[in-house]
Length: 70
Image (cartoon, rainbow, N blue to C red; front, side, top):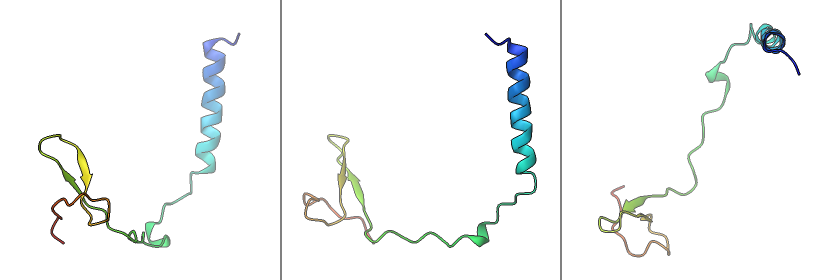
C-alpha cells in the first residue's frame, strides 16, 4: 500500500500538470451563442391543500388549473 505522503505527491504532481495545461485558457462567453428558449413554456401551480406542484401550462393534462398570467 502507498504511503499518504507518496500518494499526496503524485496527486500534487498530476494537479500541477493539469493547471499548467490550462494556464492560458480564457473563458469567453461572447464566443458561445446565446441559449435558445424552449419551444414550449411550462408553467406550474402549487395546490394549496396538497402542496403538490401541478402543470398549469394549458396542456390537455393540466387538470383545469388556473393559468399564470403571461
